[in-house]
Image (cartoon, rainbow, N blue to C red; front, side):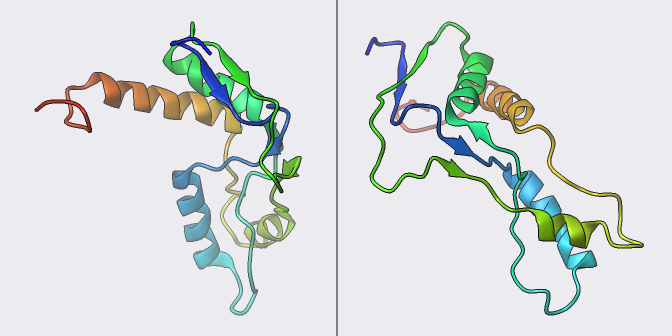
Amino acid sequence: MGAHEIKLMGSGNEQRDWLLVSDAAALMIALVKTAPIGCGPVNLGCGQAVSVHDAANEFVRAISPDVPVSFSGVRAAGDPDMLVADTTKLKDILTVKGAPPLLMPPNPLKSFGEVAQWYKNAWDEDVPRAGNAV
């Protein structure tokens, strides 16, 4: 692995459901306002499978387009191929009559670019952090 390469565990083909904290918060607020009392647990997520490869590349490309991302091919014990939220109940609750329009997170890959840009902007600012003299 070179000095300017990011090597991640796994194959990159693993599928995950990505959700920004701000989207999770918005969904929780919407549920508090619309979910019936006693409705039980509700899965939060996009309900969309995105490969770890695509997510990692989108994030790194937004920060530093010339840095390659590779994968070790070694998976952690018990790491599932796919982990995606079943959002059926969430959608049912948020689409009841009289509820606000369906509030589901946007395309997760677009979100990665936005988070990466925020991170890059914060990193470019002269803010104190570990290893950075004040």
